[in-house]
Length: 293
Image 1: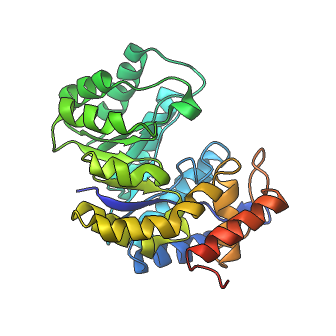
Image 2: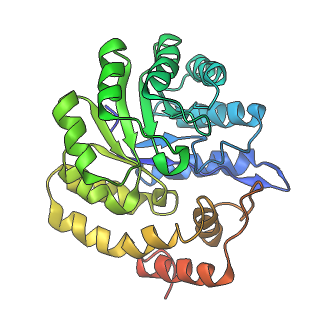
């Protein structure tokens, strides 16, 4: 089952190219540190700006290094249905365990358009499908009713990554879809509340730099040990906030570079965060015990 702390992996670059060795080291470190799953080439992995060849290579390398030790949920979404289908088929061919499929962005599809889009993806694979609802980026929202309709039509639609930051949605999805449908938060700062509403974990940005803390946080909250979960939340809350002072993955790439995990290098139009926000991230890393005070 997909649950716990699942890292939305950043994509390391060096001198303008994919840094394959850094990616391999990073994936290995994530597993060693206790992450319960990995998502290559999602939003945090700069999926809009990597080439198609790089996108496939990141999935392939992540699957290879992981070697079935934790689930790999390959980022395989697109605003083009044909492209989403092709990426999904590739993910299955190279051995991914599931795919993350985002609501088509820019097109502003209707609920019927989204149903047809995700139906095409689900029909093209036997892999489990994790729907990805992030209206802050895609403009349109994937309704609970459309999620239920997809789940009923396609048994391999088994989960949703909900990045609405609306606690009510977790309960609404649980009420409509039942306790076995997997509910994953897409936002670190509200993941505690999401789990309290019946969620099963989080596809996390912060776990790129704090995988051990977030795996402990998820294990505690899913076991109902909210005392420990709140204590970890208090340590990580400033970091959850600081990483999003500018657009993702600007903050998390800077934080990862500070910890020596990768270079602070991006694909335009993403640029490095400002000096003042670097200082805020440094302070939050120190508060979490990840940098010396």
